[in-house]
Image (cartoon, rainbow, N blue to C red; front, side, top):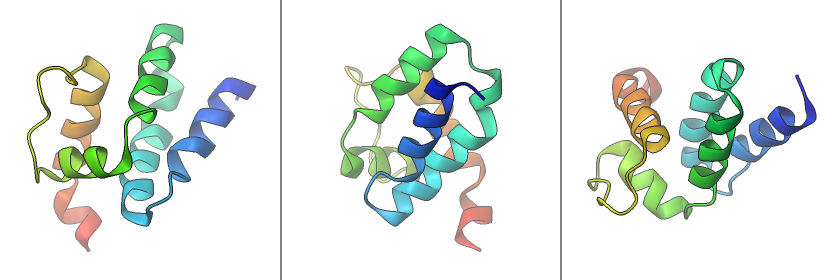
Length: 89
C-alpha cells in the first residue's frame, strides 16, 4: 500500500470519536484498494467533514444535505446503512 493510502486509512480510523472511527474506518478499510486517484481526492474531502455531521449522516439520524452530497459520501452512507445491524452487534 502506498503512503497516501496508508495515511488515509490511519486518518479514517482515528477521527476522534469511537463510533465514527468504526464507521468511516470500516468503509475505508473495505474499499480503499479499489479507489482510484480521483476517488482518493473525494475520500479525503469526506474525511475533512466534521465528525458529528458524518456520524449523523452515516447512522441515518439526519439526511445528507444537498450541498454536502457527493458520490463518495453517498457510497459511505450506503455502506454504513447496509451494515447497521452488523455494527450494532
